[in-house]
Image 1: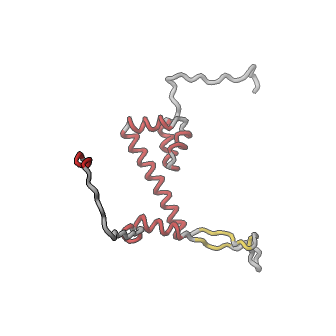
Image 2: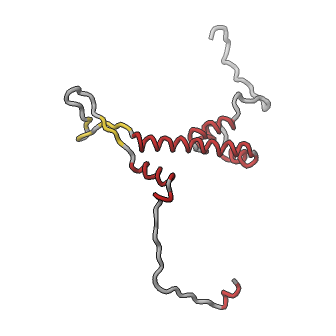
Image 3: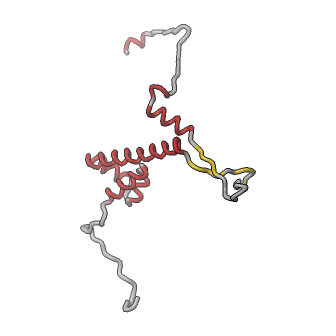
Length: 153
């Protein structure tokens, strides 16, 4: 603050001043991490309408958008697989309290796996074997009434 006689002047930006990072780059980077269009637009300080206009007008941006969504989805799938196969550790709780090892006094943990994620992954990767199957059969008579109005069809 030494030598200053008043408040610092705000930097004046003209319409020709270009930000150091393009809003499109910021949007795509965040979209790659989250796959959330609204949040990514907010982080890039632009509206959802703007990013959708960019997508409609610029095929390269549209392709980068699709790639970012694919990358975020791949990350989600990898995390789902990790939770299904490797599991995660949780503290053992009894009567609302963490259970401790009687010898060491350390909190006890147990490995938890996600059967639901395992099922989803199997349905995604082997739908011919694991998809839901419905056997629908019609029994009884079907009656159709044809009227003069039906001739116009």
